[in-house]
Length: 291
Image (cartoon, rainbow, N blue to C red; front, top):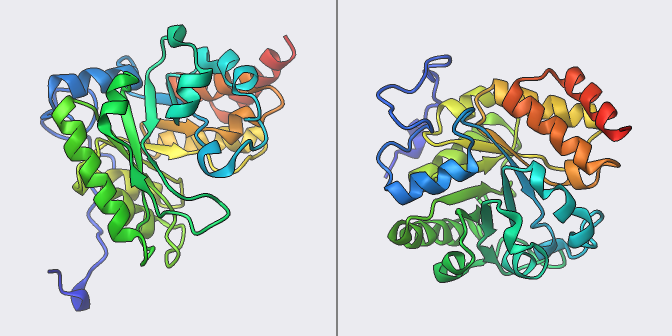
């Protein structure tokens, strides 16, 4: 056990130095099985090493939240612009056409809603991920939640065990713990714990000092979009995250709650894959919106 009286914050993050001795294009993935790499290459574009994931798994705890009342009307028409779709199995089966030809990141844990204490989740059977041809499965980890931290970490490593058997990468999703603040120290801890327990991808939140979070996490990080922001702010969020080492974004509300979702996801993709500046991407958004 680590001595809790002598825990020192890291300082040597090697900022600006690329990962050494790497042959596969995604960080930390050299020694993964061929099938895992194949699935990751569906999610992260090989030409950029980045991804724009479209998250619409909110309903599994929130119900028909704004923008997700009708998946067939809000999400299906813009799915073509995403690199990957993140959703729960019921929505995938009932609303997403099988010929969409987009990789699926399956929300693979469930249990509680916004009406009760969150995070008391259990994981789904990996066989359902196989049946759905999922390219990845996502499991939430509640670091800092004294009641649920150990259980959610156990959910993650159990799903990693199952995913490893079948070549399916697992994404660790960091929830904000009750006793932790939204800063680089917390997200660095939570992201590193996900990777240490076997996650091939980590989804976390952007914060000040985010370059330390990405540098100290040995696997690709994608950022959550979080609450709905004005379009320019959301594009700035995506740009800052990419500049600070993120391998992509997993945006939901900032896309499907926009007044022009198709234009917004294309503008986000231009930031992530083409390096457009936020104002340039906003100009693109306005052009596409008014076309």
